[in-house]
Amino acid sequence: QVQLVESGGGLVQAGGSLRLSCAASGSGVSFGAMAWYRQPPGKQRELVALITPGGGANYADSVKGRFTITRDNAKNTVYLQMNSLNPEDTAVYHCKVDFWYRDWWSVSWGQGTQVTVSP
Image 1: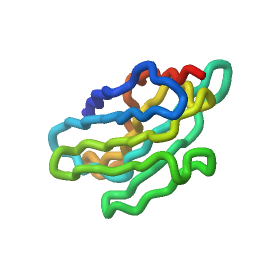
Image 2: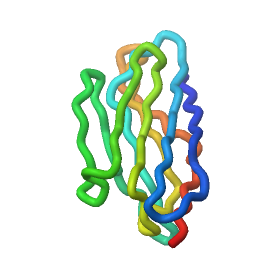
Image 3: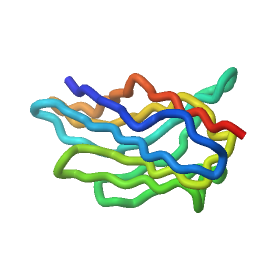
């Protein structure tokens, strides 16, 4: 019932910045928390940042002070501004959205966008 479209990944040098976007669409749904996860090569997926509908945000320790998650509730879009990138940030980044539909909370995942940080 919910589709997510991610954009903004790419190749950047260490110290650079990227901004990821994830636009959610669906009829008859209400959106809850939105989050970004990442999966580095050969590692498990991990939470990067999460934002509630009211704007409260939480971050992984590894990205605090460098990444900022925001959302535009009118556009059902979540963003991840990534600054001071380093090679350890290289991963496939996925957005995850909680949504309410027909009396149930469900989850939708984006297809993922590659972020590569060169030394």
